[in-house]
Figure 1: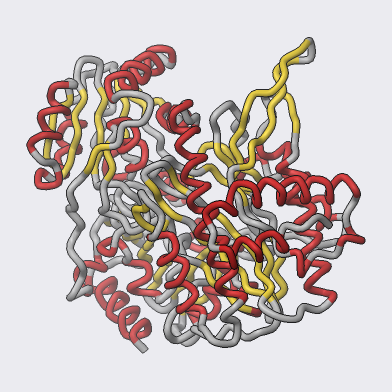
Figure 2: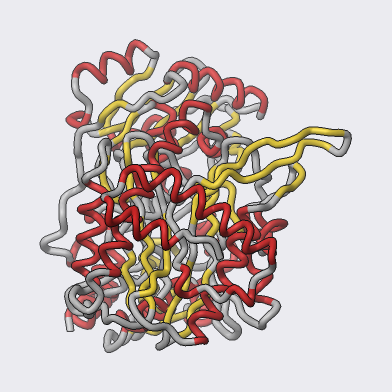
Length: 587
């Protein structure tokens, strides 16, 4: 098995380098969730392809930590590799730090590529094991003979509602209000948003590899020179931005003047960079102010996002109609190709926003399953198919999940489908005072499941970027305050509404729409907020059990379906429109 051979090679190299433990995270040099092919070291060694996980290799064993979204997938992909699965957060499962403390001696050395480990993580290890030495080499590079090269694709401009200079002016005002002189920015999404540029260095995420150093009188962009054409270079320079080599940030950080106050988000900025900052500089460990600026969409972005969701609604509705007419004749991979084809027919389509999750039957219980040739199955004319897909358009980014009936369904499936739908509808209808965050609202989505002793092991919702990452913060929906980030909802924020239920070896159900947070009435009690539903695709009536729903919930469903039919039907064929009329019929 490839993974066993690669793991053995790495362990032999560790012995040669006197490294007792080697840590391989998912992230690239920028703590990105999705990474380019060059950075997939963890997948190369372990075989686990999920978007979250950390591999720890000792000289005689190895273990991989991942979260609840990937427990089933990781178990399948690690089978036979000799790597132990560590289910993060589960009773009796040690943290990475606890595992290392129990396995290492004081004179041992921990190895990792310092460009891919966050400063917080490295400093946490040092605190728990002060006598253990760090080794900062990229050992995987020494055994990955045919490693892909780092992507250096051309960037393109995208200005929507606010110029680059206006954004930079607002950023300087925010830095001043926080008492900061300098910002170290390494987030690819933040840099792309601030500069009104997009790229294609990372699959499914229109970003480019770059660092940004914002000083009082100077902004330096560190990029590979060939990705900027002469026109973009000139515009950036005219806006006061200096272009420097992609690998040049460490040297500039070492030159920061004494007593400067520098914002460094140690949770994301890599360890190698923070080690370059002089001790005479004061580090303000906090999130970049760009995170919150980016999260609040402006009026032009809001209007464009509505257009993107209309296009996406047409594509996904056409897909559901097609799938229902081809059940028993196509595989998961063929269905995945079809949804891409239908999106690509929409004007302004750029790319998918993530790998399509097309999961039939038991595969639906694997939260982030996506079909591969070795796992692909025929979609039979019975049961349920979970389709979690999304796209990038010039007007915005989409993310939608529908659980589709492809044949007869049983009572257990109907009950589960309806309970999840009730929670989804309740959250979408929320009205709340400004100041509430995701932890306060999560019960609305989970309530119908909790009342029946059920739950799902993932967040209820995440932010969505504007032609950027499909997963964006800082806002999040989760009852755990730490995981929800405790960020209050504000006008212009996007959040997904995606409760689910997953029964191993049976089926998975998830219903997901994207919601736009809006300001509603303001009175003596304060500013009230509500959600505008952006996604326009029907829920499958064939799996809904109306007797389990309240009159109010049925009213919400019927009103939503009326809107879907009104807005989507004009873009369908006569046959599709006739089907949609029946699919959105009042219950």
